[in-house]
Image 1: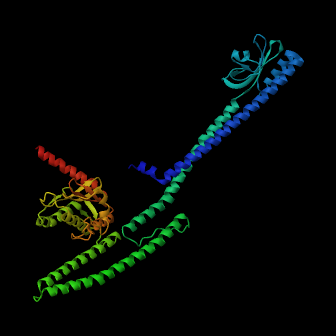
Image 2: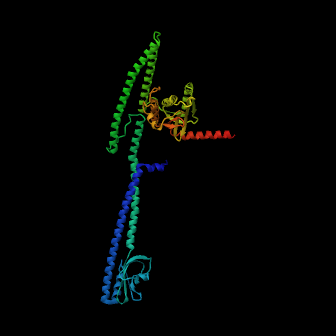
Image 3: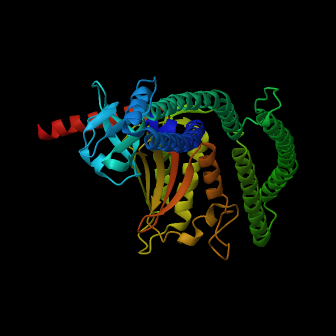
Length: 484
């Protein structure tokens, strides 16, 4: 994901854009409302002024005739900020007025109709717009009275300029909001998320930061810290109980096993008694292994592994496990293949990952006998899938039904209904717990035929690209050697 895409996915930029859009729409609506209503008021004022002037000048014409009307119009035309006036005779000749350049159709139109026209001020200049009304007098004379619209247009330009200025102000407010939210709010959220990740990795002593401002983040942090203190106390209690159980149960089991072994060393014992004691030893060993597996799963799920995490080559680890277990598989009439040619760096608990791979191999040995009875075939592999390291164990057996692939990862779940086969149903549970401890997951995939168990783990950051480049360079050199 690009930095720009990450930016637009943050809550800060989303809130800033929402606030900016909402304020822009509200401000635009207010300015449009003011502009329309102001234009309506100005138009009504113009109409009232024009109508009043026409009535006054028409009365003047009736009293003093055309000469008195011409004199009155000429006097009014010279006033500062005067209205527009024009008097014409029956032949449309201009007698007096401060308007020129009118279209002939304006004067020829119906009397009394309000019109929007373009005109040139008397003496020249740029064309302007005005609202005028033409009144027909007796004797064929026509009287035009109107008002220039320049002031109204100027007012609209002021509103448009104010709108542009306000949009810039809103953009600034949105930027300030984004900076505040990103620096204040998101910083605290990121701090809480980082603390949560450290807690999930097993450090239960971590606590969410409290600034002391008493805001909602402080209240949330205080509540969560109280919960974390309770969880930490419970986990320590669980660990103490587990240690006590380990001491109180494993020790008697071990003593009992030792006494049985000592009894087996004597010769004065018949065959049935010896078989019973040997079965007792096997049961003791099974109980001890089961108990060890339960304790290890509990500790792994609590994130309290004893061994520290360190970077290592996962491919080399897979090769070592393959070399170690190849003779074991061969002793049972099977074969173990290893595919791990690509170096890949992982950061984790090497001992736990070895235990996980061993569990997967032993699981394949138990349940993956081929249908044609030609022995177990197991493939142990390591590969890169993007930035994810995939450590897998594949067999060629009957596989697992899709409905059971999630269930089989739980503790004590065994697909063998009679439960007569050796095992306790904890192997895959331990592997799944190890995967979660390393930030990954265990995935069971149909291999057609058989089953492929994949440990999908995040690679050590910053090394995957180098590893891919190294692999590409090796492939290129191999191609050169082949072509040569």
